[in-house]
Image (cartoon, rainbow, N blue to C red):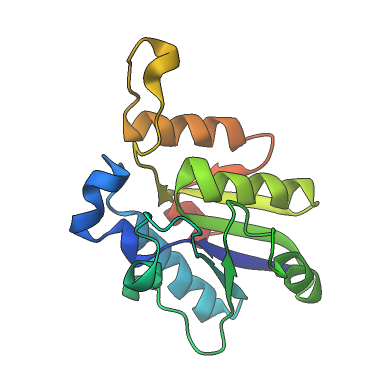
Length: 186
């Protein structure tokens, strides 16, 4: 059985300084570096790699134009597929499930941006579709964007607490959360 690496939405818009006000505060500045380490390991071991890229339908989002490009630190090789989506799930509107089945992938390892959005949704769907999922928590990051604190009397969660809460909800039921070093040493 194969273990496919899914790199979710590691796109230029998330690191361009001009977009900081749009996204808000961020945790884990090393997420992309850890994802690059995973990618190098997968390539060295000959395991399949699939990139998923968010192409937004929101004209105000930084995930358009240059912002939609995959970051250079994890640039895909010409033979590595890049699947485009416009929803939070890497499975909706793409052939990701069919590709994984064709690869005989019983397991997927997931990293990317952002933890509570596209990473979480793709992780949940992968598990619901029957894949065993490893979520590499230190190769993911969260932002404070879209935090709606009005239901909590104005309290705003930090990016780290948003990230941790998302991982807490996924670990055990939908995925096994592990750090990069443990994933590459397995």
